[in-house]
Image (tube, rainbow, N blue to C red; front, side, top):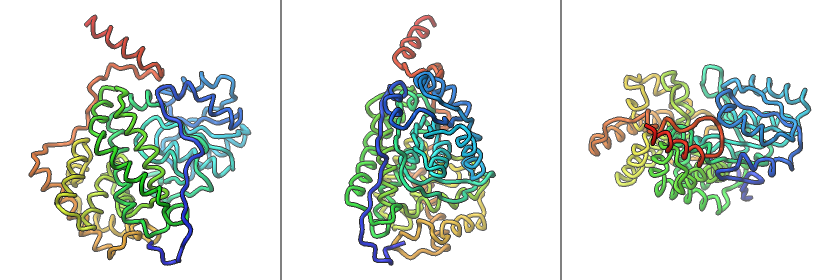
Length: 406
């Protein structure tokens, strides 16, 4: 909410250390040794095969208890894993995987008062660097935000693993990151997640995040389709993970994420990724801001270029009803929601009308630009190894040899 408590202190917060590169898993012991020797490793079965086995090999001198993640970031899952960590007498938590795995790891760490090392295997959200988490109900509906005493101690991103993840996940991360500057510009007069006003550096980070996405996002998306670690991909991974994480937490959120929270209430959208719903929320916020046609076109063109949905039909709800959309607006306007950081007049009806306007703007731009449809099956090099090894050069050489034999 705009600063009605006369907060004068400025707060900027971040992880203690951020590490990114193509051999980060192999180098992990060098950074993790400062946290202790006993840890629980939280992964799901797929990530365990892709990256967990390689990490355990690298950490052979550590006492690691691998815990299978149940698939949903819920209060129940947090409590279950906390009990395992207590029994193991873990000194720190390693959360290896996607956004919900990471959020559970941070909750466990905070609840037990031990250190947390976050190792994202995709660049699909800005969750890794933040001192908060999103918890859901078992049915996938948004439950609540969790806020922690401090940010993760260590964030390690192995870009050779990220490059092998589906390009849709990278695009979703860009949808989440694209909201960072859009929302921060409307939150600059409101306290941030650290309880203070945004520091000037947070605005610079948010602006740089957006700059990287517009300059390198499309190229990185195409590189990820063929599992190529390019400079553009490295830049976007940093923007999605580090810049967006620091930016939203210290710069603030506004309407885009609040509308995302409302969209989670629609069962017809549970197939969408976080950033895909946030992308539509960005369009809604631009409509609320009465953005110019030129500005709207800029964001719509970029989002469609990386297959992010900007209409009801693209999200998979072409026949969504007025009661459902009003429910979305009501949830977006719940007390304490980030939409109240907006300085314009906000009511559930105003938000409902903006949602309708966002769909109309997306449809009009798609028709005017000749856009046909989103692509969900964008991987063009499915034979690249998904074994989890971090030796990408070896994998690419093997691919060339197999291609030559063909």
